[in-house]
Length: 250
Image 1: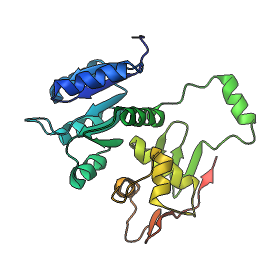
Image 2: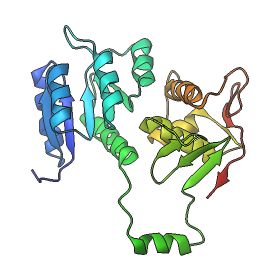
Image 3: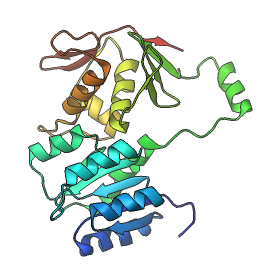
């Protein structure tokens, strides 16, 4: 396995599943660590952080949601919940704490691989720009904007950061950042849930997919936006969401 292979951690109490995932993902060029308890996973993350964690919620004697919350609070890794707990409540809770995706067992290995790659694309940090690159970007009239400003907020697209008016950074999950960016880039347009899901996660939503609604709720709290008197994100009954403020690009 190449030393620079992307590291994926798999946490599941069933050895057969971790072995299956490890074998399959290693066959596609990933470096895989198998863990069977939350404690051992957190120790791994302290010593050798993974780019993506595949986390089973149904661990005997442990609270998978608590483990997911600890991962999200301490590391900027991709987080995919892979679990047999497929009811809507578990899915909403998982997304509420910032999971990037939620896969229910039994799953198709090819679909899981596609979702992991999608998470990696969304979480990949942009490479450090050389001086020549910066000069070329500055000289290019059609270069996409790197800063989106609205209501005192600044969304730094290149650095993937949300900055408050006072200069403090407000942490966003990968899904929250992508959703905010897409809405800000389409300010003044009513955007359907299917459009937002496809643009941020690369797939269409089913009739009960509440991913976008959950992330909108989290974004509103972080932006201090009252859903009853919204200044930033307005719900449009039967249609989707509208990003209300004017956006200044730079």
